[in-house]
Image (tube, rainbow, N blue to C red):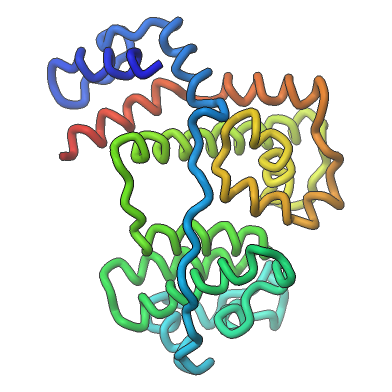
Length: 270
């Protein structure tokens, strides 16, 4: 499949020329690209654990960091519940971590990343406003959303260096995530599962846990999804023929052309 990607790169005659036919990629090659990327052979692994990050800030200082960088954060509500202000939960998360993950292997991992994010803002480093805003927005939602955002933002701040293969794998992982989100929305619309939440994070986690190994989904996402108690309680495990058909459909939803366009943009940005 690498030869298919190489053929795409070699066929560029000018920046951002990304039409599949102009790139010499027929549908057969696109299909092989999808089959390769949507498999266990191409996946983002579990990140290396970081050393301990002490809680060096007071609760007031934690609140001040978010107030400084996130406009209106004092009025953010947890799940639109009156009197349940997100800022309070942000302060608790800095001190004690996420309650839903206490007693699991992920608790310390998420706690260290969250403190890293807050310290990044406290030190006034580049991009702090965007990072802290993303986290604060997540704290309007459930702890599954909070955990996912903490991990994604924290790892971006850590700036784990990737080689060329790693960059392509990470780019493909973004498009896998979108394919899974579309799969979840489609299955809910068809009545294959019932979820009263406007944001179907828990059902997405159910699918991630059940299909992750065969689709090569991000190992950190799979690990986190397997610990989602709400996903386990609300939805039956997807297995057997249903899992096979869901995996096939997810591969169909992977937008290979969009992936190649994104890849070309990355290449042309250097």
